[in-house]
Image: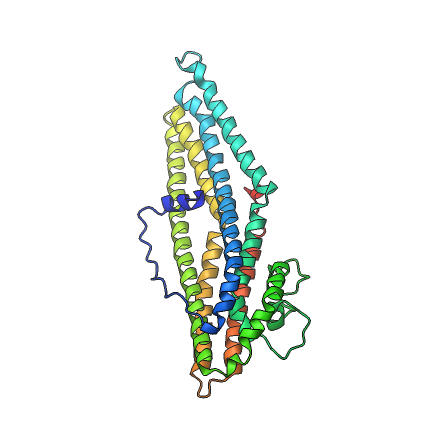
Length: 350
């Protein structure tokens, strides 16, 4: 289990998380199955890469923060144990704590160097973006205009507003180079599969139901994020209140009792509290939870629009296409918000 997930589980011990039941697996229309299978290998490759570097980056900054607090503990322990005194029997071993502190600082430096050297954050963001865009290509393909003579090979830029997702805007998370290559590679297959497909009423029904199932899956994902992030925020807040409360209590007692163990409390506890707060701030738990909570509502609106278009008396094709296009735009906007939220954070901030 990755370190950041292990820490989250440890923080949430005893928390009763009421996660919603997982929705049914989306069932795509048979007409789109060949395209989905053709893209599945590429999607899996990008998704595995995103998971790999996402774990490395998030575990990296959690490790840096918590090891920094541990280094403070190693620095103060010789004083608290009395080993710094030449009269103590274990005084010759006091240097071991200093050596341990140096080792911890070296580990922190190594994590920092490796994270920057191999660009864990950047590779995570790029791979996650490419995986997301690749995963939605089969859903996007039926929205392409077969009569269009556009020279733009990227399906996203053909269907959605290219001004909003310009390839020249460095702040936009679209990885159009890799996505464009996929679109070009599978353009012939898409054209052969989608020719005259909208005339089939059964396809329209299955496509709309599939789109709804995908959006419901996204709703479930973001509900779970909201619940977990709120729970982690609440638990870390309670821990910090306890740690700083004990620090204040130790400082008051220290006015009456002069013992080095109280110095340990008033030094290590605030360092641990600050580390937890810093790691939580770097993870953007509050803003991610709030963003996911808002998106759950927005996705419900997108689902309702598709259902309305599907239930229309004549099942107007244009209305259904517009509803699915709006849902895809919503998902892309959410991913862009996530990109802009995560991108400013780098391991140096830790």
